[in-house]
Length: 381
Image (cartoon, rainbow, N blue to C red; front, side, top):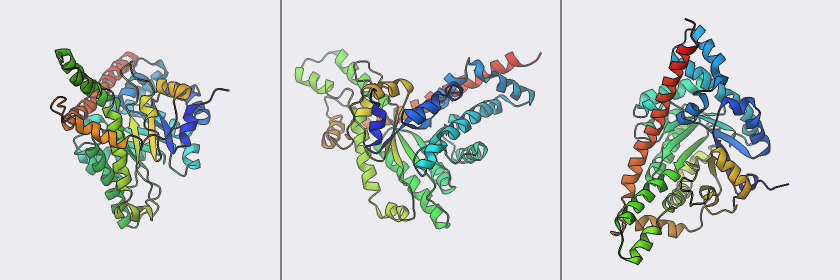
């Protein structure tokens, strides 16, 4: 029988979650099989995933028609579809949640991306989603924006599991970790239990390399006379995202050594794990599992799209590498300041955050438009 490398990764303290959710995989039994036999112990979703799942898929038609008969507006019909999928996925993952004492077994759902700059609206929607879905193992996704982090703090204080998404810079991760800690401190100060709350910090990878590789390629295209300079530029390609993630992990290690964290841990708090997101390789010349192989390590999660899950199960080279090449990682990020390379990493991260929100807003709008069309199509004349 072939070895499933995903199961091997668990031995190194990393959990594998699937970055995909649709009614098809719930009803066909595929999700149950992935959970029971293939090592998947959580699911993440986002507006782009739901757009692919719902648009043009007849499996949702009966529920859309029920929503029409009930006189629901399009947005409420959308929620009825998505909340049902989330609840069913939570039920499938519940045995994992119970077996791991709430470490894994979560299903993530994102608040509407259109409110990413509105703290109070984010808090309100996170509370409503959590209450209406009604599952202990649901995790509400909130973008790690300037407005999102105070919302994270409050929602954690409310006792709601949170997945902070769209993190690109190490600095944004550190702020996220402290928002989690502050939220737990607020809850603990009120004498409430903090042992049942879980959080992950979703740190994005491939989009960083795509952006920086594009800048490097543009420099190479202009022509480089010096062979040494060309080599210096090529050495950066495909390496920044992993280096950035390894530095973030070092910051995680520092945070869990602080007195603030130790005081919370003594009260039963769970660590906020770094979750590697955007892990499908965009450049075909790179290994299709490079964002898995290089970042296996304790107290982490890697969320993989289906194709990467299959690739990893087949040929991941599993070893704990999260702390290998750490010095080289710092040197690589520092090298971006070299006048010959001249890439402003902070500017890149800011660009990626804006793009990331847009990549969720547009599919959400597209989904609502296609759902509106379907409502008209299915509505009785």
